[in-house]
Image 1 (spheres, helix red, strand yellow):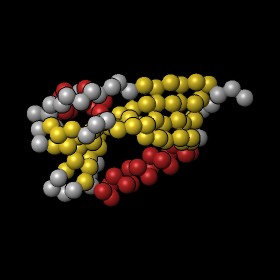
Image 2 (cartoon, one colour):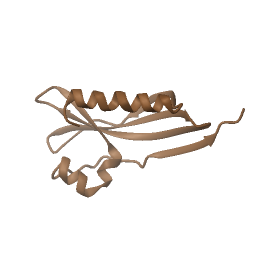
Image 3 (cartoon, helix red, strand yellow):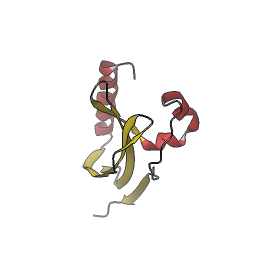
Length: 116
């Protein structure tokens, strides 16, 4: 994203645009974390998240997953959208030679009209 400052500007701009369009986060939860395993010399896990939002008279609920990879040298975790691992070209670019036995579930999304 061009570094921390550039990433913050993109995120701030995105949230300002969402707010202007009436987008509201109602809920954001972490539902669970898989077992932490050591693969290819890295500690890894899968995190299940749940988001509920409102926009344009509709309620959007989604379940999505992050892959957590612990960076032992820097002593912190990196998180990426697990669904991106389904894109082989992207995976080879950002995580060359990546292999895992962790189950990466499919994301789920539901859109419902809000009834008064």
